[in-house]
Image (cartoon, rainbow, N blue to C red; front, side, top):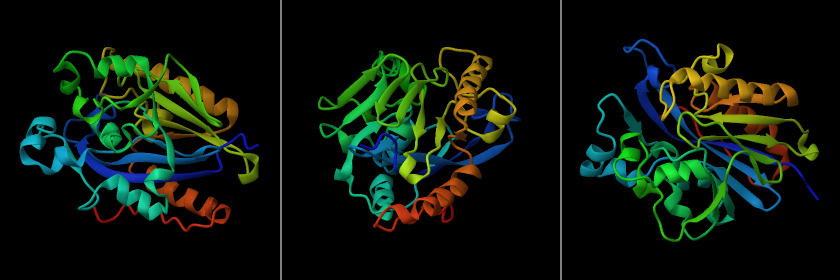
Length: 284
């Protein structure tokens, strides 16, 4: 029986034009970045697990909803095409939606949880209890922090709730990294020996950029903690990565994400029969 992940496909589910200070606390207000919106597909024993789901397109394409949910003029969500980003990304990867048997959520922000509606009543969704409690706390507190209840408040959602670090699939461990949101989690991915072993630590929004990791710079967007407190979560992930000799991957880095997308496509090209072309970072 296989015990590790056998294939990783990175998805780019859109982009975000925003102030760098959201990712790096104290960055000059005039500095802006166009950051990728990440999704990660993992081929596990039970099938494909998806980490994060991108935007809810309805909230962006409808003018009234966009004003409500994305009304801050400093922040601009960018969709990669006219259709559903997740459906289009999966099609390009050669993976049918019904082959996804579980979803892992780093957190419930609108750029990560917007595609959850595709999975309501279909597959388990792994989340931290603290995140779910925050998401369902009285309106409008979460919404003011970019958590849109409309993205995930569905009576048929099959929540799998954890209180702290937990293995959610063979070779996939969720690691609590609270700070960006109360129940943010990152993911440690162990690769199977049949594909060369090793692994990755996907920080998601515990560390948006390479400089957050290399220089231990606090992230700028937090809930319930001071930005400086997020450095300890970065150090936690760095310790895990160092102990295992895994690469620590920032969640929204505009240079790292497309480069690693291509690298992993090349690495796993010989381990499957379906051609999966990486999403381009062009055409924004």
